[in-house]
Image (cartoon, rainbow, N blue to C red; front, side):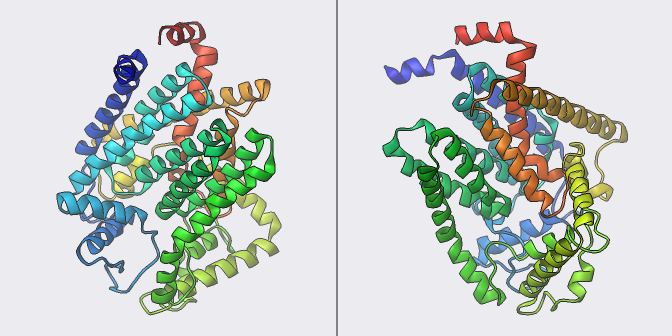
Length: 430
């Protein structure tokens, strides 16, 4: 009887409709998008595709072009693709459809997080905004890690938000669950590990007691270390250097901290020329160590330049939301969109994105005025991720996992300013 009553709730059908809408929008784009890893492009999708085939066929993780073991890319997304390929064959179309399912599920998580932190109207509005956001849709058509990473990122936030709301005897289990999901997120992209800091601060603030909060965060951190350890051992043995998740960490750090740095995607060839060849044993580890060392030396000896670079990185990080189309067309080298449609979609993506940011700004003003810990988790997440990329380099695609967070803040603003009375009536009806 309880299950039957729950299924009959109008709220469930509203959310289901939003998730179906999200899936339909993503599927339409993914099937229309002609991007394919082997269409002549040379980007991350090409490497992910062949790494996934290597995992499926030989259970190895070798660079498909050099044939030597690699750790340049964390194994999470290639392993995800390998699972898809194991079921459907090496089908890019199947991978795109699965990504549409993952993207639609992310919209469902926006709703769940909204119900945890706010109320039904905010959760519904935030999920609807996320369902139709062009920037979240466009990446489903390419085999990049953004869609999976953002799903796991939101799942981790759901686990983090749940812990303070649970009885004390259940919090250890929730801390462990959060640690596992954060580790999975970090296996897709190292940035996911920063959610441990978000968890520690949010739990401390929400519980009003920092000692148990730090102990719980310590449980999550311990699980992350233990679960990453096997991959670290593999890297240490096969790459001849201590590399936790990715050997590209040092290169990415150097990109953001060297003479002549722009704050964006700078060429790392000067660094590689001073390093051991990467197709030789120990080459990736040597470039990683050298990048970290030279980047740190530059940062410590050029404080003025570092401040200027930080501003440039933030500007690049939040500069428009048309990057999904750019990546789908390989930066213009593999165009498939008519010129007029490309212009329209780019304009729509940017306009929608800036409108969401504006509404999120209104929500932050509301938080500043009203206080409370509800939106603290979202604001804290934005701040930690932003500072994380300031420490490395900036690119518009790096704000992708934050888009659902901004959508939920926008939904809170909509519930407060734009449609308050009608949403209050909706709350009463549901």
